[in-house]
Amino acid sequence: MKQREIDAAWQAPRQCELCGIRHLVLFADLDSDDFQLIHKPIDVLSYSAGAVLYRTSDAPEYLFTIRQGLLKLVQYLPNGGQRIVRVLEQGDVAGLELLLGQPYQHDVVVLEPTDVCRIPVAVVDRLSRDTPRLHRQLLKRWQRAVNEADAWLTDLSTGSARSRVARLLLRLAEIGSADRFYLPSREDIGAMVGITTETASRSIAEFKRAGVIRELDAKHAALDEFEMKGFSEK
Amino acid sequence: MKQREIDAAWQAPRQCELCGIRHLVLFADLDSDDFQLIHKPIDVLSYSAGAVLYRTSDAPEYLFTIRQGLLKLVQYLPNGGQRIVRVLEQGDVAGLELLLGQPYQHDVVVLEPTDVCRIPVAVVDRLSRDTPRLHRQLLKRWQRAVNEADAWLTDLSTGSARSRVARLLLRLAEIGSADRFYLPSREDIGAMVGITTETASRSIAEFKRAGVIRELDAKHAALDEFEMKGFSEK
DNA sequence: CGACCGATTGAAGGTCGTCAAACTACGTGG
DNA sequence: CCACGTAGTTTGACGACCTTCAATCGGTCG
Image 1 (tube, chains in turn yellow, brown, cyan, blue):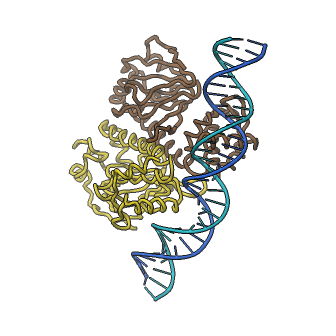
Image 2: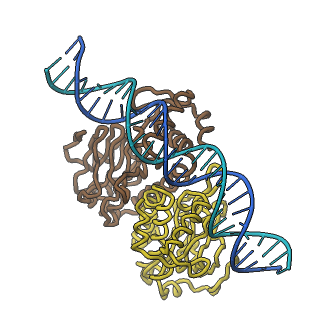
Image 3: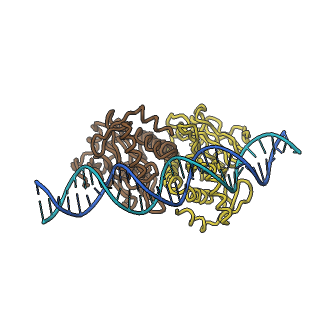
């Protein structure tokens, strides 16, 4: 539940320039000069399942790029319930809205152990002003968020409960490795596709009985993609 | 159903610079020099209800900023049905995805008579490269789309059919003028909140009987905001 | 071992989807 | 001018699916 700091040492320009996954992240297109503009610490942090990156009520100070892991973006309903509006994976960015002066729009909670770079807004603001190269990456990230959001409406909020769950699992399977994907709690599945925990449980149980998914451990499973596509249609 | 061209005459730099609603649109922050970079025609077009701005299959040539009117963004479901994922109003932009080399992501259809500026992608690309001022506006538009999309998930795809419809009408009432808002066809209401046409019709009929909405003409109504908020909760 | 949390399953009831028919508005053509 | 056809809305009946409430099961952690 707690966060652990890997890199307290402050040498962000070097660190970022040498980053192993830079081609995937926000700073993909920056050059040596650009990195010199970074005058505030960028920390690499690790979170374990259940940890909270931030809440809507937190001070809007940091963006996060996901180096590794899986997170959920949660919004609250008029009646107090909650809805998961998106899931973030490697290369995604949380907190883009800060660049426009908005407060955090979601609570962000860790699903699978996650490493992030925590970047002060001021850094991105600065870079954003002076390097057009960063812009394209920002636009990309934003458009990705829109595409995802639209897909959640068409794929995950339409059709029967069972087919929604099927489509969710197919999606999660694409994110995970070939033969192993993250299987959320029944409550989270419900919050992702807009059904109750019990109905989610019934769907999953049914898939297991039909042999379309096999449970590997508490939070992971493998699935027969072809069979599952059958269920996803009605 | 057809489109009418208001300004065939080609003097975009002047036209845009003098635009009456420039403070609302994509080019809000540009200055005189910036406008000189526009070397392709920007046309002002009018569409009437039912007209199609573009389809996903169209050649990705133009962005559209909405000067006036109301449009729906439609995506298609695995089974062939359709889901309306968002609605555009004055100041919104359609086709932002083109800036990232993606094809159009939606079919865009006119709900209320609409005026747009049709801008060649090349123009925005060019401006985008050379003027950081445009960037902020682009980011704003994108973030707005994300916020909207998230709200459609939490407000319009969760809860009972009646409360979803109630929340949709409250939303439409905010867009419309004080005592008059656009009331979509029952089919479109269904496609917006993820229910069938019949259920949408029953909800609307119920609201009318309860006196919460009054029909003004075929496509417009007025509503008692306070009463409607009651329905929106469960 | 006992407490607790999440998943599963059951039963009952309600909401919503489905199929179908009637009604209205509107425009066309006789 | 009226008859008629079409498209969208409304309403009804019925059944399926989903929610709700509740009990049980299984595993984990003190």
